[in-house]
Image 1 (cartoon, rainbow, N blue to C red):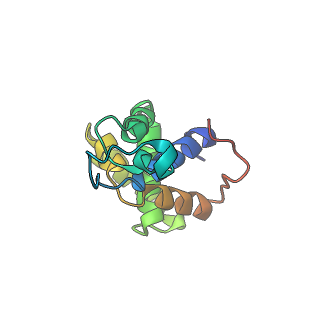
Image 2 (tube, rainbow, N blue to C red; image 1 turned 180 degrees about the horizontal axis):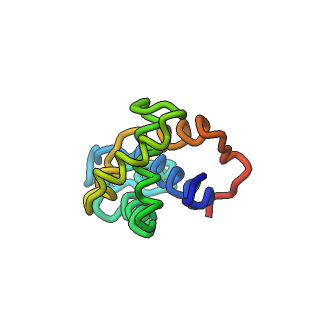
Image 3 (cartoon, rainbow, N blue to C red; image 1 turned 135 degrees about the vertical axis):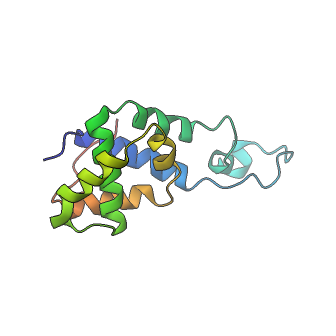
Length: 132
């Protein structure tokens, strides 16, 4: 049913989860180091933090059909469509598809949760997959 490989989806979900927990820097001049602060700085949304870059790279690497599916999965998991409306979600995603989808998807709050929910509704399980 899906053309996106499940291991690719697992990777996108993992990167979306990493990116989704980032917070604005509290104090850029703390002089803190990873040993003292338990590596908390990795959660700060800074220009050199690779989470968004990796997420966007994974989304941009998808072909046209896979990107349409990712968009439809997001809508399904968000509750815009029910599982039995999957073909309609795909059609709507295909019609609305443009070059801004990667940024839209990467910027979607709770993207990882939406994708997991959609996969569950469609009968897929990611528990057994190893994220690359």
